[in-house]
Image (cartoon, rainbow, N blue to C red):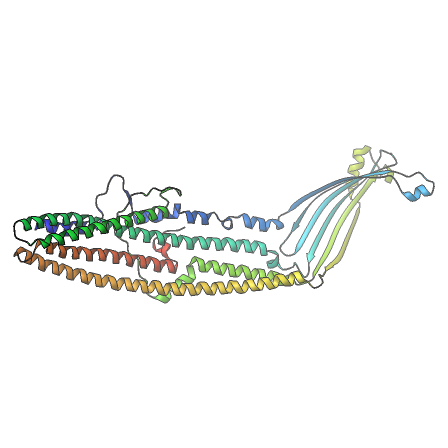
Length: 495
């Protein structure tokens, strides 16, 4: 009787963490999740998205950064042709000119430019030049097209929204990776328990087969009992082969999700789960979960960011339909010096610096109008932007619909898993009652060891079913919270 009862005790012990081999890798739930967040390849790829960097924003903001410019030129003229026709010798002249300045554009449609220029004029082979220098401040202000700050900052706003969208997509991807990791962990947990129980069942069946042969030899059992015992043993051995493959597949999937092996590695670490299935709250109300999903789920927030970006493009495209009318004004100061101009100089250097007295001041103002006939480009851009806006709005509605559908499914899966767990617990209790009754019959010699082992196997089967049901409930809860977008928050983790 002690031998036949061993399977129940050992099988139940196999369902909880126990001793592992030296080459086994012990892994808790939090360790698995943290490894996945750090090493999962899909998350690594998502983190390397250019939109997550500041590069696109720097490119978009570059037009508003100051620009330093400089120019130098040398020109030579042989003289006026008209003077040759008049019988006069042409006067050759050489002009050397240089300019340096800085310009800057603002998102208000304003641009300003400050420049400093110098020119030296040599004429008639005379080395005493005339120097001219000037300082000019020019400002341009858009009055129609280009005056909109939001339109001018379209590229910058779009880059910022793209970065926010990429972050939200990354968070959603992390939620999915964590959910997949937890499901893989639970699947491995159940597969390991199934493998341990079947290994013990094989040993017990072998013992039962030996006991049956002994009883048959003693004339206490008919010969047909051996066939039944052999069949039970073969059934357990066949199931063990399938379970061994399930354990290997579960280990391989979990190892790759958490990045425990190289991408090209064919090795499968001997991962062992070392804690019972953690529980998550089921949520009190489906509509609250929906509100939470619309408030924090990454793919929905990313769709909203994309919609906002398309609205910026539409506004900018509408603004480009206006004619381009700019107000241009400048203030300038010039100075002239040199012997040929009658200025007082003390050599070439003194003549040059004397030109910076800036004794002449002037200003100018005007309007610049540009109106493309038909304005087909701007109209086409507006039409395309409006179509993309409609697509973005439909995309938001599509994500809303997806969230509602996934929440309904996840909610029903939780209810189903909970009801199945309750039924399995009842079936397990009935099997235990049946076992107690069979043990009483066995003690009085009214049943066989083989029949008692079969009843014990039913108890083990129901206990395994309970472990699977508990894992299914945990996976359903993980799916529910991942659908609501709060799985990471529930686990106290951040991307």
